[in-house]
Length: 143
Image 1 (spheres, rainbow, N blue to C red):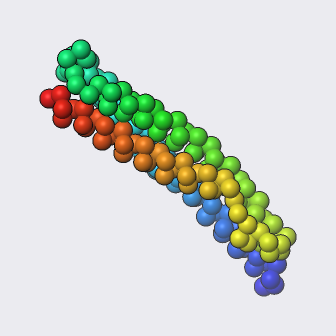
Image 2: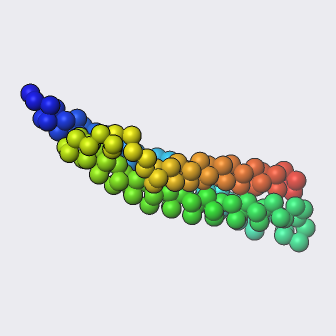
């Protein structure tokens, strides 16, 4: 087997790996943040409506801020899905250029879409945790 054919096999394997990563990223992290943020937002909306009268509640700002943060977590997760798709598309191009066209500069070429996606995923997780904390604070104070 010559080097070019070996590179084609490596490229095919790398491409499959990236596509599986794309699916896994989409199905796991993003889905979890979206589901949990949406559920927590819904539960907290129901809590305020069914359990606590807003005029009698204390630290209402913490609940309202948690709603904003849940919404931001949902939006940033949706945006991260789009940036992830773009990142994988770019990485496939880099892989093709490296493995098939033998352009060595593409082996470690920076993919900014990957950096943006990582930032958004981390940001979503942090915002989600802060929203949960604020909701819990509100509940503890008002029960």
